[in-house]
Image 1 (spheres, helix red, strand yellow):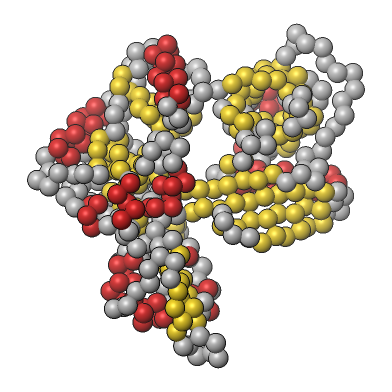
Image 2 (cartoon, one colour):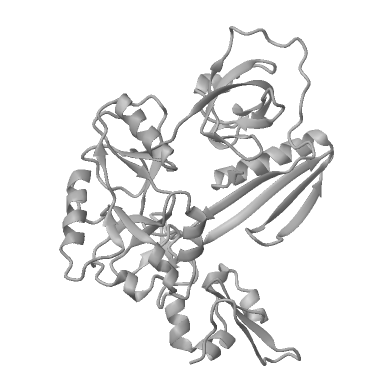
Length: 425
């Protein structure tokens, strides 16, 4: 059957006057017909009769993962209601609070790649989408469950995403490695599962060129942790992952797996209070603060229940921790530490309303998802702009009753996006 190489397009006569355009862009196929455009699934999960006619049913079924559903399967909950199956039952990490003693834990480099779940036959993303690895990449892979990362190199996250999201099983996969850090079905504690990984990968009749066990070492104490973190960061790595000894593999977020990144301390002036949502409704949700540079942002973590009920007053100077600065000078992952009572407080405070005409840009990149979202407040207008990274996207402006209502809407939308995993750039 004919096919399209990367960057090629062709036309096919349909029911309309103009022919439909079929393309292969970066290994992702598309068609300009309404049937393809109007599907609610991600673009890499769509097909249509024109693509099937061009490539053949077998090729399209293979591209879409054969029997894999295009929408999440439904299962019955304990109450009898249907719920979406989001993806494989992965163990997810929590962030280290800089206080828990990690002596005796197992540490490894935090890889800036793409999480991948080998189900014994194919690679799946966290959302359950298929990674189209070439046959030569998966040749000899064992028929057991493996949890790991598709990874090219440090500071090559975007390159990794651009390769593994392709659907044409191209030779660019030769850059990728599958680094295995757990075996969900092996049973036993973490040490037993690591031994199982090493034995399983080493015992294959066909040598596994691209699959390797991820290296772990024992964390002796805090000094050992700091030294390893400094070494990894000096090489351009993201940080560390710490695993509790003898811990079980459990689906969902767990305190037995912690991610550790270096935190910096800084000070800021409180300029406002943001109302809490959910379990924090009626209490502080976040502090609106301003750096000496004039940069404003929100600090929403690190508070005790008591501090949320009686937060630092407007005008107070606080100490907070953060991991790094964005290109715009905004601290990423800020966490409240304490009020500075040993510094003079300003007699007058010039309030800076959030969203004073300057856009804030957020991105969500995970698996095959690569999206941006931006927001701007100017007076009573709140404008949002969203779309896939690399596209023009679309915009929407909402005019509120007054500036206070606009600020509240602005804060609500930012909170929703950050809760859904969008990171400010």
